[in-house]
Image 1 (tube, helix red, strand yellow):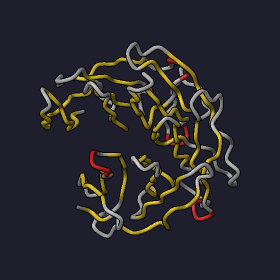
Image 2 (cartoon, rainbow, N blue to C red; image 1 turned 180 degrees about the horizontal axis):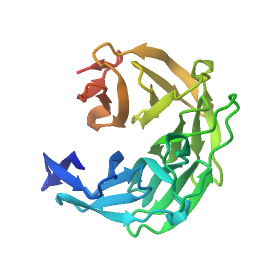
Image 3 (spheres, rainbow, N blue to C red; image 1 turned 90 degrees about the horizontal axis):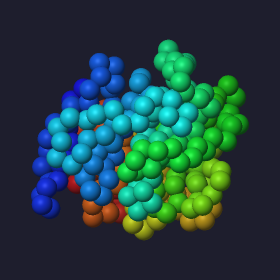
Length: 255
């Protein structure tokens, strides 16, 4: 699988292809460390690939089953705490079964330099009928925030915390199927999440995860499937047409 990534050298950033080896390891998520190292998660393979700064080939770095890792979804490198966060999920409902993985959906953490296991945090059980919690993506700003796609919750893990706790909830997210998807945190402390295969963004902030804006439509984006914080207080979103676009400003428009 060939992934378009941004490679930085001497302060300059350029686009280049990074090949992720493996015939079934389609990258589900990607993150970059402060030094430019790239990390890729594999949903089907349940493992993590890493590409050194400037490299065009990603190699297996964290093996399947490490730290109980099941199908790997969202991945986020936090250089400040030397931590790699990974969403681990049971994907047997989609025909993907990894015998080395633990089935409870969980947030797994690894040492960013060595890949050694740090900890695992099982998500609280979903209160929605016939739905299980689902760790989809992560945002970090001291506290780690997790988008739970099938429980209607944004969860958080405080620094030094031993368990994930419910931080934000909205009754509009209490529907069957996947809702919250990508998640990003901006410099002002606002946490944004996009709706899976939807056109809206939801934002929350503060100790109680209060709403600071209603979900709103970004008509220039077809179907948002991924969300990341970018430079200059912008958010970078990928839509269903394969376009990578920046969202910024108080009206959250594509610019």
